[in-house]
Image 1 (tube, helix red, strand yellow):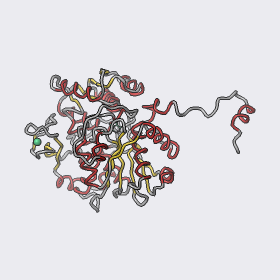
Image 2 (image 1 turned 90 degrees about the vertical axis):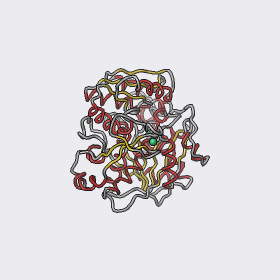
Image 3 (image 1 turned 60 degrees about the vertical axis):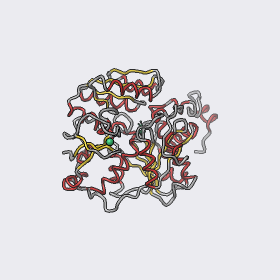
Image 4 (image 1 turned 45 degrees about the vertical axis):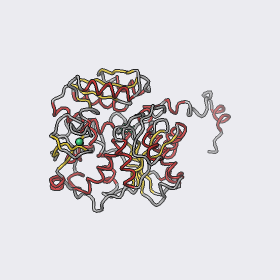
Length: 410
Ligand SMILES: *Cc1c(COP(=O)(O)O)cnc(C)c1O
Ligand SMILES: [Zn+2]
């Protein structure tokens, strides 16, 4: 049962009824779901959550879908992996990897889409839609297929083959738009006022965004109901980043943690699309839109909707927002794979590369309990590493050929 009280404007604080709306009609600020935290405190306990399903729906009381998991492919409750070998390479102490590559369509987007489409069904929509940098496209197409909804998915035409194929296979309508994500998003804003569709990241965005809070809930539950000291989170629109913070706060608000959170929130961007990191570096509170040019296409949003709020969260919690080059992204992917056996996509390379940079600078410290969010599977962006790795040797099928070419010690 949801304990939602309504929608609230994040700028002016005015309240609105639950509906498929996303901006304040007074100040055009973004709307956010608000809850009755006293009611939630009464209805949840650590035990009730631990008895729940192994998915985001174990936290249904803290999510905005009234009928719970109406659209469910099993998103969430992914492993939190202790990463001692990665920590040792970087000179850190306690590092954990939240392995969100293991979601149904291989990225964290399954969390937000499961919530968005569950809400869309409640509103009576028959068609799901989105503007996507790739992973959202995969997830909307899959969840729509599962729920029997029509889907119209819009992507930039230059996306990785892996992401195009893994969207198209679900059989919805996939539209490749000749432009970058910000062009696609602008088109979708127009379409959203013409067609009565559930655009998960336009008119359903307030509900969609809440799904990211489950990353914070799971992290704390998996750490034995304790908070990390420092997290590193990739930033595209900045939504995930701000909602992880909201999730940490809510757990304390509803009495599930003993201590109040003191989690430093650090953000990771690709240098070729780093409007939030640049604003942080320049100590400015205006985000200047950029034209993206990076291999981290899933994070290539040049005009991030939640950029300002992400910046604010980093400042308020003593975190930083940093960026890494395309070479550092590839190194980051390979470092995580080599040390921990986890193959992440380019967004993971951004996060691991940023962790390495912040560790070297002493910003992420060896005395901190650190969690990094690895948000997408490496098989989706094979081309990022394809020219860097391959067979160690190619040999004839004989023992002599093997020994001659490789001669290992034992
Ligand atoms: C969408 C996405 C993110 C972050 O998205 P926000 O827009 O900042 O919420 C991070 N990693 C991956 C792999 C993504 O697809
Ligand atoms: Zn307002």
